[in-house]
Length: 242
Image 1 (cartoon, rainbow, N blue to C red):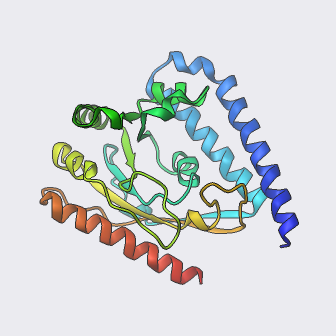
Image 2 (cartoon, rainbow, N blue to C red):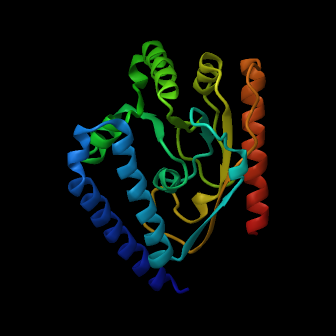
């Protein structure tokens, strides 16, 4: 594919993506008056539409591995590698009744922010330090008891393929507080939807759910296992891609 065609397809996708997102948020805005699960169903519809757009307009296929590692009952935590905005676009098309742990500033995005609030997403205000963390634990417990699944990105920010940053201990504290299954996730989305780039590259995105980490571990041991499983699987995906 020539660079010009790549640019054209990427820009068309971006325009259609924003039209689709605005349309869904506007048409279903009345659901913001209803309960969390209804709002999340709207997010799931939006995400499924995005998968179709990625396939038709950009040529990105999505391969899901390890679904057998997901608990049969809701109320689990997904700890995912974070390479791209793509995983935040796709997870709702894969996992039911799912909410995110996210920085509070995202709650003020026009239209979309209202859905984040009403779906029960857990916000972190880094300026408030310890009090924000305590609030995060309390909300995580509440959401899990309500039967929701929680997605958290332990690195706290997007990292380019082949790189990583420090895994934040907030995940370990939630793990210790709630005693819920934690499923690590490896992915290669950064190759196809790079950070801070308009370009979208065709190919096969792999999202892989790894075996759950057992409960009751020491926090340091837990974090070591999560990081090793994710990074080892991401490295293997990179080798397979090459």
